[in-house]
Length: 273
Image (cartoon, rainbow, N blue to C red; front, side, top):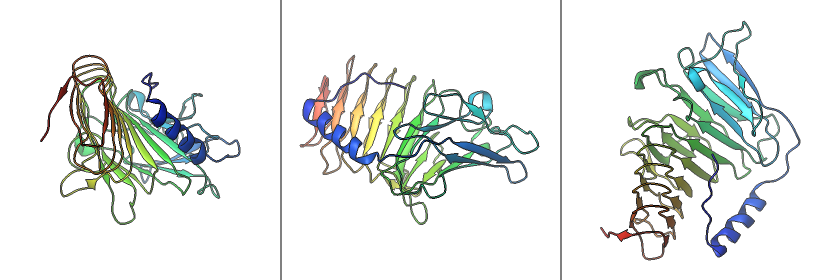
């Protein structure tokens, strides 16, 4: 999903420099996927080239992957069984051998269908094993209403964790990431970086949140977040931390609850609590 919102000059320059520094070169390669129908695990090796992403999606329930904007491939077992949200319970995404220190970007895309077989009890759990290259995680929401919680993991899951459907448990875990981006897409969406009480703490890495079309509620985490309401009547909650956040309401009538050091744009109503 492409976004046309532009940041103010100073912030844009800072982010541009950070992005260049965070993306070291990677030898051209290609991602791959295996499916073990006996253990119900899908394993995707992230081999995307420098600056591009490996995208994991499940359109029509069938689990697929692609590099950059290239062709999507289905994950199939050695015996020809196609991996789907009905026969897989776990997806593991990891770097190629010897590439753990290189930059990785992973996109978990639910715009064509959720990673679940129609109920919360049959969710496919996703684990993204990152390296030390300032890695990025992007989540693309559905075309209907979403409830997405971003928080901080514990133990071996030291990176950000996400509840993708608002049922209060962890659906997506990572070992590390430099920042997380959530593109909520269409629908009246709720996206928060405050975590889930008793399940995950507040996100302790920077977040970039995009509301898309619809009346959305977007709430940041504990670091310097960037929040775009885009189309619709949106609420942007960026107060509650000591970081300097950037919030842009976009089109229509938008409300924000800012902190004293936050930068705001296209906000029609301010609330303080």
